Length: 456
Image (cartoon, rainbow, N blue to C red; front, top):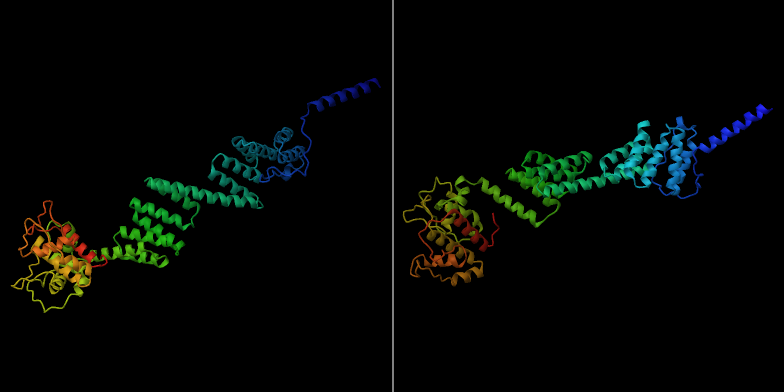
């Protein structure tokens, strides 16, 4: 009896010691408490661990977490792991406690330990995504969120978060790419656009903006490829066709550029597109002109054939309104590249045919010749423009080298009064000086302006 009592007392003593050494945890939080962190994904206990003694502490820890008592939650999750070290749901629970404390780095470490035990554990994947997002690792966080949804398709709220993150990330990447492009860091901008397109391959504006960067880099074939991809994805966006037009224009393929700009104007008419089309028509016409015409702008001197062509091209509408004269006989222009324009300007009286019936197309044009041609053109323009007519009547120039009695005085006065020509710094006109190509073009452009003609 004494031995039995001794054994019983000893057992009671041992039980008391064990009870005193056991981990103390807070009592279970009320189940009716409104959750403080409704977006946190409960670390569900998988079937193999369902009978583990740690389950009670785990559930209590989650209830205390949602009640807002983070210390009690931490004690319960820690007690679960102490009881059953392989109980990874509570490792995820500690990750969420760290998230609630805004300790993202510690949270990520807890989630990583849970995932080391169960790589497809949805709750840990979702929590790890939140931790990485807080650490500024958006792309990695997005991968973790997507893995969580794959592991548990029931996480519908997380799907919406993924879409928001994708859109926000897209905007941030695009903003960064635009800033890089604006700063002239074109390779960096191109790499950013390419990475963004990989994440969102059906976004037409990304292809358009990449094409613009590639055009600036000089990679026109790739730029065209991406601009056309943008137009294919969104054929109702005029900016896609404007970009295509700019690339073709850079390649000097003016006909194709005009077709692209015309498509853009059909979708959204604008004065800017009309002006661009006019400019391209001029470039197309210029490209089709003989080399002798295209070289006028940089020429040190201008021939009579070149001046006739300039006047004929730019003042075509004025020349058509000129009174018909008798047929002009010219014997030396049949083989000239400028023959059609020579015939047009001589019939309208802008340039003369010499008494021996020659035009002398290769002779240099002097300032006196240009003044005569300008005054004759202004006379035609004045017939339908009273303002120009009044200016012609009041033209009285003062030139030290051209007295009023000179045969070319009136022509020089009219040319200067109208702004078609100008005098030198000391006021002289220099009748005999050969004109340059730049002077000829400036004079004809001014005549075109006074005639109210659209620039070709």
